[in-house]
Image (cartoon, rainbow, N blue to C red):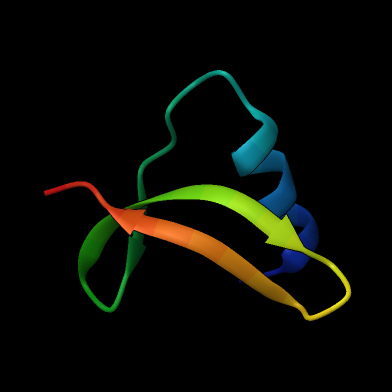
Length: 43
């Protein structure tokens, strides 16, 4: 995923439908320096 788009999703108050390897996830935070994201499964 594009890091700018991941940042937009993380900052949005609206829950986006995001999947990673077929599982729905929540993007909590995007770290630009390490180019990583903190994500949590929704199930």
